[in-house]
Structures are given as C-alpha cells and as structure tokens.
Image (cartoon, helix red, strand yellow):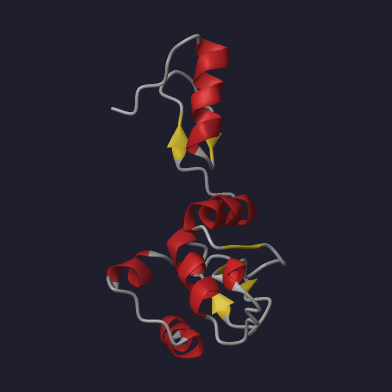
Length: 122
C-alpha cells in the first residue's frame, strides 16, 4: 500500500493521523533531499521539510526547508506560503468573486482594490 510506504520512508507520524489519511497521492511529488514520495498537503510538506534527516542545516534559518527547492526560513508561516506556490494550494477565497489566493494578505489587497471593501475575517 502506497500510504504505508510513505509512512516508513518519511519516518513521520503526525499528531493527528487523520491528516495523512485525508490526503491522497495525486501527483508524483518527491523530496529533493531524500527522494521520499510526498503528498500534496501543505502541513505534511511543512513537517517533512522540518524533520527530513537528509537536509543539511548550517544555521537556525534552516529550521524549515522547502522540499522542492533551496528556499529556507525559520518562520513556518513564510514556508507555508512558499509551499503553497509550489503545489498551487489557494485556501483563501474572495467572498465577492472567484478570486483565490495562497496568501491572506494578497486576498486582503484584492478585496480592497477590486471591491473597495475593508476585508473582514469573520
């Protein structure tokens, strides 16, 4: 079963195992460092980039490392936004039109400019 191979390969057991079972391997995503097959899920990729034993971490700015390129950060929020660009994840939706964004600040700017409305998170 592919999912079991993924668990062994990545040596990753999330706090909530339902995260792993809720996603499917829909693309051939592979870690740039360990060649482990990955799932297209932002939190999983964030965690793998933080825990992959094959990644060299010369200083604290390498706490979170992108599994697809050389980008690294010590800020999980910055890494989430970066990962979303790679996998095309756009979780922020405009309530006034079909616009979607990978970042909340981009959605806020969109709503102000295109709809002349202050964006309300509620």
